[in-house]
Image 1: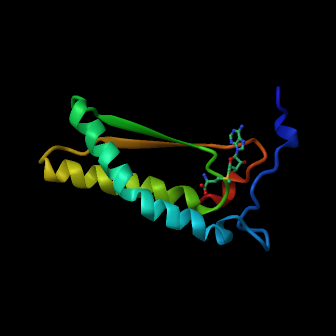
Image 2: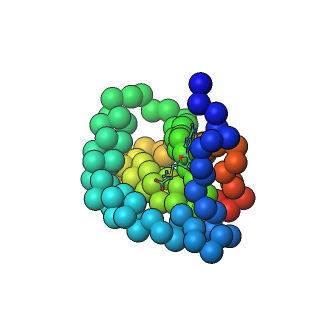
Image 3: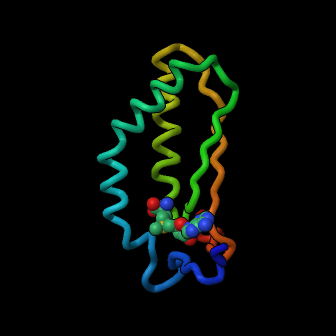
Length: 108
Ligand SMILES: C[S@@+](CC[C@H](N)C(=O)[O-])C[C@H]1O[C@@H](n2cnc3c(N)ncnc32)[C@H](O)[C@@H]1O
């Protein structure tokens, strides 16, 4: 079994060289994949009965605000689809997961 002690976490935003300040490629990939995310959410919502809550998990959210780009994108997409369908938006719960050594304080 792999030990988390041997796994390196990303540098938090309080470090001189941080993951969040060096992830422009990730942001580009997010923008490029947004139409697929939108189609997937649309398809998912069309196949299920109205629900009061949708849960989203970021497995490896890292430090810094990166996790909010996809999370806010999902909120925007769900809100817009529901508004267009004249139905109430469900509550969204976002679960942020990472290694114990990750600096979660710098996420917010
Ligand atoms: C390359 S970063 C990706 C960060 C972010 N999701 C993004 O796309 O910008 C990978 C993250 O996964 C975390 N990670 C690695 N192994 C993990 C595990 N077993 N459980 C939870 N998180 C893990 C690392 O600590 C790191 O923050």
